[in-house]
Length: 229
Image (cartoon, rainbow, N blue to C red; front, side, top):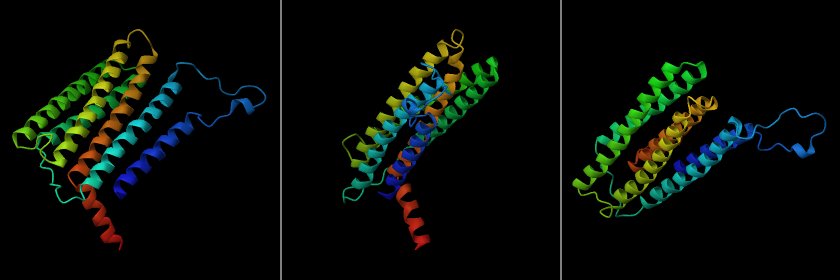
């Protein structure tokens, strides 16, 4: 439970810091004199604030799922998850897509069109590979008898991984929409940075969920308690 609470606290701190930097606490109706900042409707700051709010909600959702797994582990019928190796391949592909999008965002900031296209292509291919690896992982789990209703761990893995895949598909749709506007709207290039931030979030969440499902998070917490006591 302490791991889950720590994850929730981390998400909350990051989200509140982000919103604060977007000026969510500003009270323009109390200000006097000339305006020092003119908001830009539909501009990048609004997009960042919107993404920040969405990440708060999505992070809370995954934190609740992780909390449910942690509490369920305390029951006698809990069995340790035996994840197939393709899950770790998928994790590597997800990390590659996250790095590729970050590189694409840097290329867009420099005005490097060729680099932007190259990194977007690599990142998209890695995303497709992750989705394929996730589908194969479900097949391998079913073949090993760890079906949706076989064990609590398998049920939670199917639920959380399915929820994560839905977020990945949503991110792909947003990325495709931005990519189609690259030649028409100059602001679309800067939106690649928002897509990269979202993909970093997906990577962090997936690492945290795998750590909880495999028991690594609980082992790490127990080790820290033993060291500090």
